[in-house]
Amino acid sequence: MTTDTNSPKATYAAAGVSIAAGDEAVEKLKPWAQKANRPEVLGGIGGFAGLFKLKLDRWKDPVLAASTDGVGTKIAVAQAMDVHDTIGVDLVAMVVDDLVVCGAEPLLLQDYIAVGKVVPDRIAAVVKGIAEGCVQAGCALLGGETAEHPGLMADGVYDVSATGVGVVEASKLLGPDRVQGGDVVIGMGSTGLHSNGYSLARHVLLEIARMPLEGHVEEFGRTLGEELLEPTKIYAKDCLALAAEADARTFAHITGGGLVANLARVIPEGLTATLDRGTWTPAPVFALIAQRGRVEREEMEKTFNMGVGMVAVVSAEDADRALAVLTARHVPAWVLGEVSESESEDAARVVLRGEHPRF
Figure 1 (tube, one colour):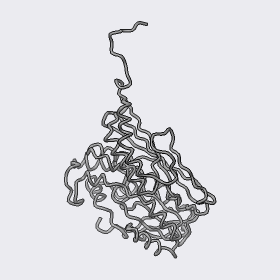
Figure 2 (tube, rainbow, N blue to C red):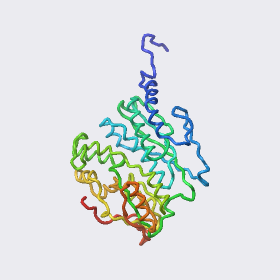
Figure 3 (cartoon, rainbow, N blue to C red):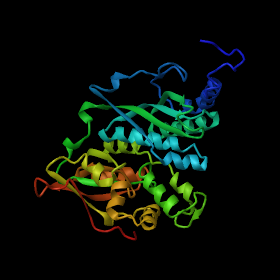
Figure 4 (cartoon, rainbow, N blue to C red):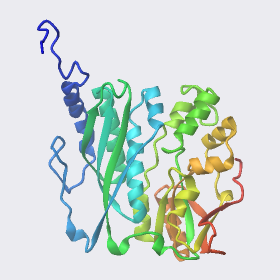
């Protein structure tokens, strides 16, 4: 084998990976990551592994819970608008609010950011959002990984995911086994689309309706892009406060699949949760998608949260107390319906009835 001594020498940088840019990104994100901390964290950002000292004296019989998620094609809107400091909040919400469904307190989160090319300021903006989300959730951001993939991803493209870990006392573990006939279903309002259904939303609003992201939309009182990038509401602390003050049976995080599919996951066989659409009005963004895309109600309801981001199932005796806790925490909440014994063996676990007012 011969080598052309006059040809340029291959380097990692020439192949598209910049170690220097990666180091710069780490330095820029450190101040944000340090804001999302807990007393149990040992060491700082930059180690091979994050360390978290679990204080076992707080729990007699601790159960660890873990969840991994991403934010889907909402990232395409962030990249199109060149706004990167909110998508991290969405990421945290998707992970920690899956943890809290079983009553687990979120303890720590680690992120993974895949990019075509490391742009330090952009990475720092993404991590800023992740850190802000962790602060809202009360968990520590225990490091992560930024991976540069030249040739596999375009320079301006990135994707994010994260894994979170929480803990719950075994005796306080929430779930379908606690749900009973007569329980009350409480809905908590969403802040919009949250992080699900963006493939359909983008198809309808950007491709069919040809609406510009920078265009002002009267129904929203802001631009379409600003509406679509509204961060996902993080309910973790609110759910934990409710569980501490009232007899909570379980929660359901309303994400992909919509209200019916996600609530059905925590309603046991033999019971049916009957919900009334007349108890709330979905935000204008849902009506706009339905109208511009001529999307049928069934398709809307199995794709989007339709204005309900989290659901609590509580005992009838504590329904008023649960609502008071959420109201005091400034969470829009209302009685969605109730749980009853199923009329037949093949009865649906969740039934939606009635019509939304002004939708």
